[in-house]
Length: 252
Image (tube, rainbow, N blue to C red; front, top):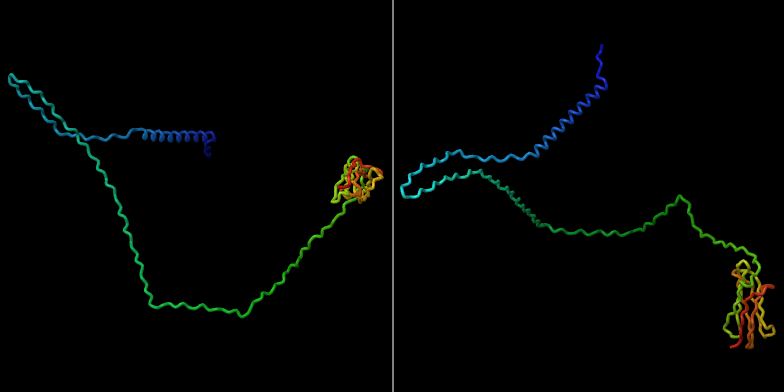
């Protein structure tokens, strides 16, 4: 019958015991190392001389009537300590520089330079163009196309929003009347016919009606007279009379 091996519990216990022993060994080594570093270094030993001490002399009897001399204690010289002999520094001799002599070359035969030959072209080489395998593309400028603006039918004319202004010309007998027609939506009325009139109607004034309004609703006409008078200019769009009525005076 085969013997049964150690159980897992026994193996685990064996591992624990070995780990504890290893930790103890490491701790012991650390303690020894720290103790060796903390212990003071050994003191140098002073040699002691074993020479025989001198025997004190016997006291000499002092005659009567004299003061006895005080005995003198022999003085022992201090021990001689060994002297430390300093080792002299070693000096390294600097390397001796080596001189290099440059040989002098004396030319024996003069060298004559050879003339450079001149090459005269005899024929002109013309490169032959190689046809490209790709088709040639020539860019063309784009053609600008103008899109006509759509024509908008103006709304009802606004007499208060429209403007009528009188501007003098080079002649004091001629005035320029500029009219801007605006509809009730606040937009310029294009293509509208404007007629001019004046008050009083019996005044000798000649009126030049303006052309139809442009895209901004603006047009201009002229009034002139040969007499020095003042009249009020009115502008109408159909049956609608504009509220602004400027006054013009002819003459210098």
